[in-house]
Image (tube, rainbow, N blue to C red):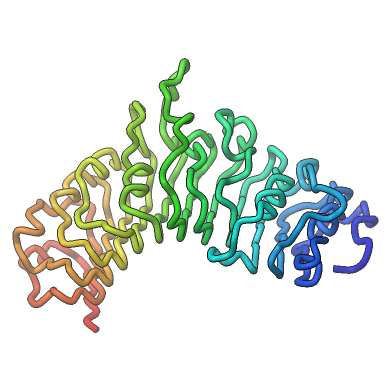
Length: 325
């Protein structure tokens, strides 16, 4: 980035802020990040990219770097060199701690983060008050993080994409205790959810919480389940509350052998896609003993190794596509 860019205090548009490889390695990433603090009038979207392995902290510990940017709507943080094999030095966490956005933020994306835990501003009971307008949250390739924030507390969240979070163990225990003021809904505004590269345990915790909520995921319209490790069958408990679901995609689940009768609960389902599930045999009538729902009109089956013949229930569909490898 240009030297002393932080002095241009009237700047309104800065799509990307790059912290170069040399700055990261030499321990000056925090000093470079602090240059953003004066750019309080930035608007629309800002992408912060660390181009090297973030080393020791520089002279000034970063703090409150973007919190005063009340006009910013989208914040992307990308640790380009966030290899999950690297030892966690705490540097990534310190960078993220300094990047708590203003309450007006609507979109947040975190990629290749190498820390063991998410920053403290995400791991709080009152998360919905800190980020009341957050609509879109994308967390990708954060392989070491162990505990999920209480994301269901975000009142405006409509799109959630946790991808490749192999180290997750579940929600933090402190968020699972009975609340003095029970929440009315679980993910009350969520419409689109993509679960990719996580374990079966975590996927079920998100889809079927143990918390006592009257209407979990009641407004969800689109669900993608992709590369969920260990998933052998689709549990009825997971789907029984998804009354509004219109599109379901199940992909790359190598251990999936059965859909059970989970689809009978999806009364609003319009499109069903099943792809790259080598152990799933839909030609077996016992695997699809369900009454085809009135709204279900489109079926996509892609590269299912055990699909040897077309089952009779296909006649119920107005449109279907089968791709055989």
